[in-house]
Image 1: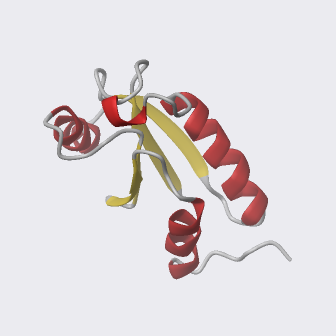
Image 2: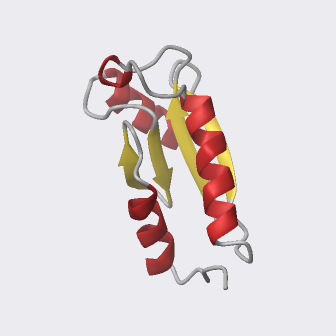
Length: 103
């Protein structure tokens, strides 16, 4: 499974004191792979000013139009979290997909 984190070099206006989008992605990568060590989960970062494909353009346009805050966390075309992401929501999403937790 691939999880995409959309963000930018500058913090979003409502997340001034939060980590950068890249730092958030690195933190999520470590936390998710620690909780789901047997799952094949790759994290991907996309700068909102440089989308790479149609799905990226769809989400980055919504972020730029202020429909979502960044960092925006997306998997399988579904928004999992935005702004300051909550691990519990991400873990619940992965659990619903049948991924196995660490023992």
